[in-house]
Amino acid sequence: MIFDYPTAYPADDCERLVPDGATARRLVRERRPELLDLLAQRRARFASMIAARGDAPVQGAEDAVLMAFCRLAYRHGSWGKDFHHYHNEDHIFEILGARLERLIDAIGIEALSLRDWFLLALFAAAHDLRQREVPRFAAGIGSNERASIEETFRILRAAGFTPERNAEVFLGIELMIAGSTFDARPPLPAREYNTAEIVVQSGGALAQKLDAKLDKHAPGWRDDARIVHALRLALIAADLDTANVAETFPRFMASTERLCLEREMRSHRRPDEAASAQPVLDFLTTGQERYFFDLHRFSSAQGRTAFAAAKEANVAPMRELIRQLRLRVDTPHSGAEVLQTFRTVVAELS
Image (cartoon, rainbow, N blue to C red; front, side):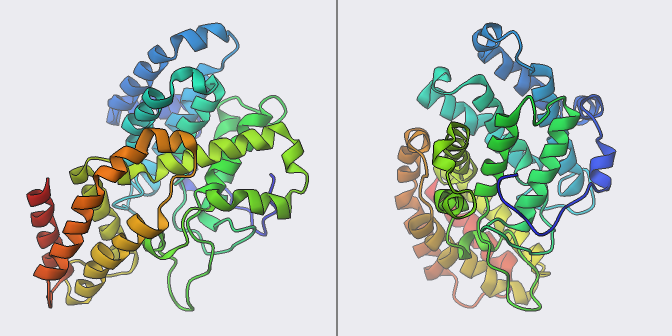
């Protein structure tokens, strides 16, 4: 570990449900076989790079992705009892599928190594593994992210990787997941830490400040080529994670609605209650306005190449959506009412 941390996060029941790659592969084959199809397509696309590296642990790499997918599906997804509308297994598909394809198309397969592409895929599957950890912060890294890093290390070992043979893999995924921290400030007393809310209340992803954190906690890192390269990957990973801003406008707004619903769930409010009316309106107007126009920035040249133009295409409809919501919604009776107006305006603008 590069960063010291005050707390360790041991395995839980979800980890024990998916102890190895064989179990994960069986579960995915039974429940989400499209993930196996996606991995097969990606393997075919990288066939020349795989062939050039006969020692590439392709099976182990896929096993790691599959294990992370299943564990998130159990812990916060549709296979378990603590469903999160945004941070669930479908978010893995969003990043691992179309977004990663867009990055490959934009910068070319040869722009990164086979190990780098694997790390970006693993990041897609593993960076949100934990969402319910008690807030404890160190080096700017949130407890959810630290717990996800530790679990991912255990996944890597179960898939056949070791820190001795594969140091760059462990180093890379640590920085990538650490950089996905959106806010490391503790919540106000007596408030539950709401990972859906901090997206629009934070100072943005930690990835953009990782160099300063490394200066403080790992002096001399700039002389270590492995850390320098891992930081580069962390910036690309942050752009993949936040590239919902560059989806087509209806898809972007669908993810916004899911994040809004998760925020209400984590705040113990139901959308059909009056208590959710103003928070939902604030999230869909002021919150999204602040995030999209003020907070979100692409961290890497690769991310800008792949996604900046598509984000720019969403600027005008985003402004109009916010304007229309403020115009049409005066004194809402519930969050559900606000969301219905939101869907109507999105349909009109799409």
